[in-house]
Image 1 (tube, each protein chain N blue to C red):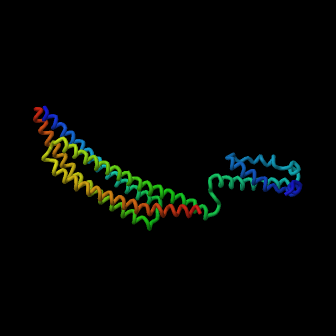
Image 2: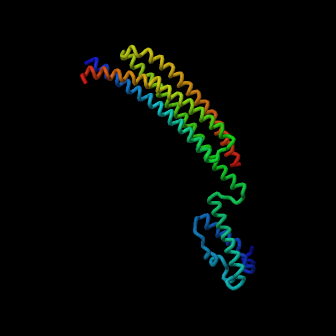
Image 3: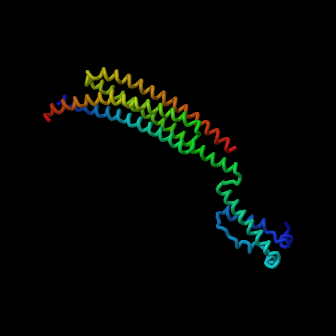
Length: 178
Length: 98
């Protein structure tokens, strides 16, 4: 639009929109005095109402769009829904991953405690004390060790089952991102 | 004197071993609780209804197994070591004239 036609028509919609979006993008508060800088002085007397309304109305629209861009909130229902869903999927994924990590940490911990128990029995044997105690304890440890191995296998199985939830969520997040 | 030292070592052994076993049980119980909390959290954060039973069943299986293991460690190991520590402690007290 030529400057002459803008003055003649009093159409400052583009100037208003551009100013609004610029202020919002730079996190500035609304400043409608910009109208007086943008408008040609001729429009103070010619087509003032139209110049004022076209600038102000579009300044607000531009400002709102700038805020949407800043906060990544888009104006279609579909995209908003996708953004919200994606956030949920990510929270769910975080929880599921955390659970799997907790189980892995438990596996390390119980393996180390099982090993410590064995070291205790070995130390007792090498110190040759409690001779009458060692044989039954070896038997008990052997049973204990098998039980702990069963627990480890169960945890492995649980981790692989939880990984299926993780994979499904990763796929949903990827789909939501398009 | 040598005998007293040996008894003191045995008592130390019993206490350390009991600590390991108690740690193991505490860790198992803690993770079972964490498991339950994670599943509850997923449910309250709107995780898929159709997928919740799978996680709930896993959690329930985990809890049942862990309860069994904790009970087993307590009755078969902690009590056994504890019994020994009571005996050793008694003999040591006698030998020290306490």
